[in-house]
Image (cartoon, rainbow over all chains, first blue to last red; front, side, top):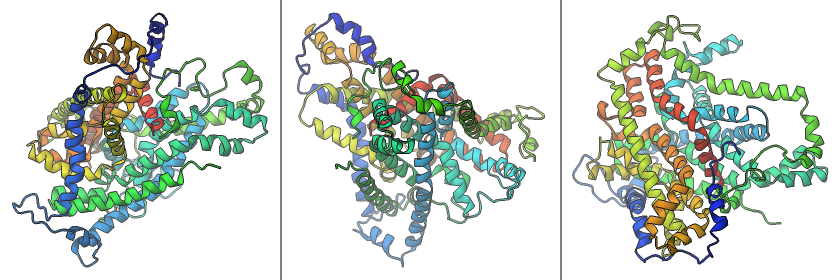
Length: 320
Length: 312
């Protein structure tokens, strides 16, 4: 880490501090208004584009809110009832998209938790070229989903794609329709996402691994712990807080999968890979049924909140 | 919150800090027999083989993207795929740069303006807010900070519909303001910079105050210059995020000439479904700036990302 670490303020400050032994007199004095003036620009944005929208979304979801029509009648919970009423037109559209999000999340999250950890464990050791490898693994992440989607649609092309070509060369089936048939399309979307974001999780894991005191490993070795025992008793407990964090952000990211589908499969085949967020955007921002779309986004968020509680409960500190 | 959040990103002493991976002190190395035995040449070879194979997996698609952008239309669709363009041509670039329906240069300029403005707003507003939250005492501080942190885990999907309406009310639909302003309230930015400010020794600010400096002077003349690396990290991350943002620009920017590069790539793809030479040229144009930033400033970027985990 030392080579990549951002110079800490202490580096320059320490020298100054030596001859400036000012006594600690607590927090600097300031007027009552000053803190709020410092906060003002941020709070304007925060309230206007984060807090207000959260409330406004709820309000919209209680109306039949067609962006293009003048009247926006209040309908109470009707939009929500429709989502749970199998007789309504939107029921199957919504739950198909939730199913797509579910499939993708369930398939991608475990891979995105385990593979980056393995990479981080291999990297958590000093060897020549380590920073280079770390940078290479991280590189796809800086590209953004648009480039990744356009690129992999080409590489996964059933006829002229690189993937099928090399699979064929290895004697494997070389004619899989990666983007137009299930379940291959899920393998493709999950695989591309792992390729794209694995480096991100690896970097977070690696930082956490390096924060585990070396003394703990030494003590474990003195006690005759095997490598596996060291992992279970030292590494894993040391990673727990970060594991909860990574699990959370990975679930949220996977549940918001959009670009891969939009660019590589256009939600197809049929509507198989049209995820919930994709459907919400289409319903609300293409067809302008904003009431329906807002209700959908609240139901999806409710699912995610239940999941978060579950994750934090799973990773809670267990006191023995 | 992670237990590490109190001492990061503090001034870690490079020589004794816990940050490095392998054994360092001679004492440790002597007692490290087990691991020493594991480091036989054979195992080293296997380790490097795995690392190199993995690196190829990550890098070769990018290389192929660049290679294809210099092929002809037929070359890009050729079987078997070739790793050296034959004939080598810049046709694809010339073609997309001159096509009127897909103004790539305009998209490039739009993306640049949007990403730079967004990053500037993120850094300025987060730094000011973070300083108040780190150093000033006032009623409601806990509430404000709590609210900001709570939104770190709010799924962005919930904001799409209402923000579209708000942006519409402001008259910003189909303008760059729509992709610059709404995403500028960065909860991560406030969190990240607050931690950094907390690690600066308070005595410095105290001394400046005794010299008669007011909070604004202390903030701009003392705290900000000391925080340059942290500000650079946050600015870079904001720049990358905005440059790569996809869903929101696709839906709020409709005119071809007003799109950003990611939204434009989607337009390019709809217009040239299987012209992979053109699509790869567009993808290269969208990637080159961020790849260059990454190559030269990767320590800031990777540092920022690893900190985000420590903050969890």
